[in-house]
Length: 374
Image (cartoon, rainbow, N blue to C red; front, top):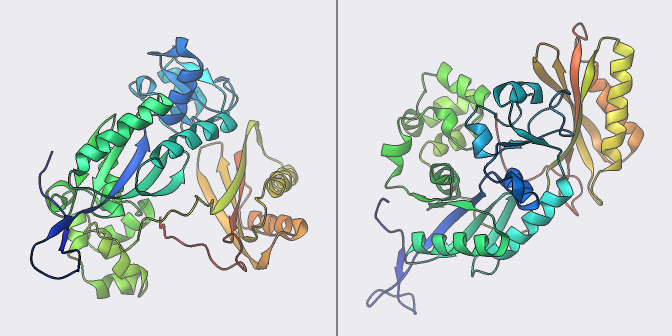
């Protein structure tokens, strides 16, 4: 493991002189094969077998993989892969239906274990969280956290140790499985510099293509890019922010606020392709109304996006912003149908989805916090 320490030397009075080292770190705790591991706890007889979770558990039907155990991944099974493809790659795999409630309960036990430590815990989802900690030996503390989670939940996690959230998030991928990995400003250039820009947290394929068009292909090239060039391409705020990702820095603090879902989605894969535009419209409305029924209390819908996947697996989306944030069902449905009208319905449709972007809890419908670009 690389050496080095990150810290601020202060006396109790905050003056120079005899110092007491206070070292602040960010941990990214990422559960290993979380959903599959939870299912194995419920079905111990599956331990050591390739487990694939998705849809209603029938791989002969249309549907996608939600998660796969490491054993299944060794056969090339990946999340979002069609279940039928997963069956071809792993014919001896055990296929199980998704049970969201059970996974949520397991997630709560994990987060409760993290909160037994003197740390800020920021939950990012079912299977991951940031922790803001102070420690002289960060790796030792990470191992202690890892052991506590295992003891309390029988589930393994990997932990990325960093001096920013961005570095900690990327470090956890290097830690998998069941490991601890440190990535700080010191290690960043050698480890991340040569990698393509879409290896960074927050940069998707579309943005990577735009950066490539500017002659920026690697993380190191992005770190040394001209802010003015990026601002001209992406905007005066987003451009410099993208450049900062190349150095691994971020100015975000780990907060203890509860995890807040920024959007709600419903989608359906059809066992038979839809070809009739009127039927596609009816199904879109039905999915939108199911989504409305599941909206969290106190949250308003600001934007509606329709997702469409054709029989050839070409996937596209179109969205519409609502005139004002609302929970009115008819307005939301009409907006979904307006977004659907932007598609050319000239190919068989395999999947339809509707997503609502939500206001912050207790807000007046202003834009959600956080930033993610694709």
